[in-house]
Length: 306
Image (cartoon, rainbow, N blue to C red; front, side):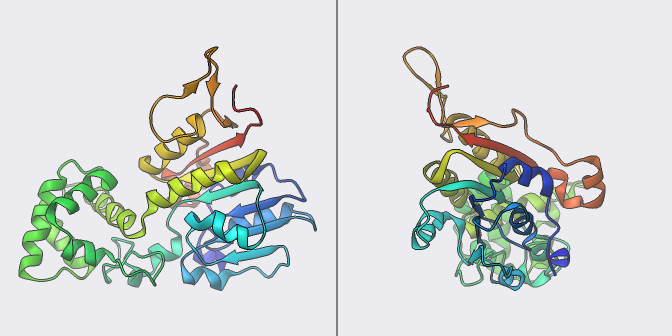
């Protein structure tokens, strides 16, 4: 089932980045098809433990039967609270593969892909009340423009928002094909897929609060990781990657790295790889979705000055 559900990206590289200890406690915060979790369990001994998070109910169909494993059906931004329930206060490693799963993209009814018609949904957690249709049909024009600019990096976001609001005043925009039709006059010739992907990315990030969840995860990783604990994160677009890169380099999301009286950098992490790891040519050939992936790995250091 996992093979159909989702092909893990940079599987071996991301697991190697965790430097797994057989008796360690690890978290896979993006369980999906369970590919990364299975690989972690293969390296854990009898005394090891693995927790996984996934807010998509479909992921529960891939649950692994193993006494060392626990799947938590929640957003990973609640990591610390749920681990407290399991009496876990320290971790040896955290893995995050932040991409939308193949399963989610391939299910037209979920509304994630521009390839299929379906409802404008885009919810990771289908119990959540906010859908892409809500944003498109109910948000104010200026707010839609801000979302498209900040999360889709679209420079003509105000014009796009204006066209959406004009169209919805005639008829609600409820499906993917309807939205594509509304956007057609603004779609650059020869760059249709990229333009639509940016619009869909912006809506999806807003629907799921993805960047807020990522920030919460990174901040909690600093509290939860043991000295020497590893953080292994795969990102798929510049907004995610910028947050991860800054946090690993500086221990914060913005501003310059802090220094002590002697000019030494004060940062809680040591970069395991100075530059992001990219998919191999072989993987790019086998898995098209890996083309935008970047893997960054950092180790929490014992003394916060380096």
